[in-house]
Amino acid sequence: MLREDYSIWRCGRHEISLARPRVMGILNVTPDSFSDGGENIDPAKAVERALQMMDEGADIIDVGGESTRPGHKPVSPEEEAHRIVPVIRGIMAKAPTAIISVDTRHAAVAKVCLRLGVSILNDVTGFTDPAMVQVAAESDCGCIVMHWNKLAGTSSRRMVQLDTERPLRNSAARAHEHEALHPAGDRAHHARDHGLWATRRDCSCAPASTTTASASTRPRL
Image (cartoon, rainbow, N blue to C red; front, side):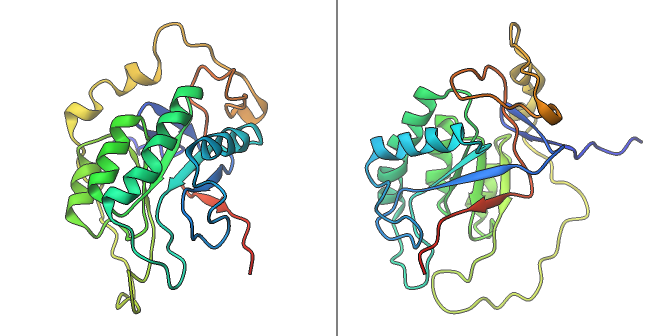
């Protein structure tokens, strides 16, 4: 049996080459994040910031509506959705081929965002909620497994046991993956290192990103 090719990260309708490191632009739609809290709480400003990061070279836009800084105040799913749903809609309206990741620990929010066109679930609690696992398993999205010391106190975990086999994904969710990734009439944008490097307004095929996500913010300590 041939080994599965892990040089491609398939996230929903996007096929992401891992030929080079990829850049994730962090968009905090919060009033209290440590790096840019309050700067992007207005949906219109948040959308413009996302487009700016894409034009500056970000491969993925990670949208979050809840701060996880020390001493933060937990946000309800309703409030989180109120913050990020208009932003995700705005990004998709202006850049339909954008690769968007949603940073959430709430399964209900994740489910809504996937319906809006989000391609990646970034769960700061490491998919410890069975409901979040179910949402991911029923889709063909990419997953980023984060580690966090929960809402309060310190984590009791000392190690993470990885599955020896990949979990089965919903076959119906993956049935038309190839057709979604290679629709008729798509143009291939050639670029240096064969990544998909194009501005948001010129991109008609899936831009590239990374499984080992490296995100940069601008901390003000």
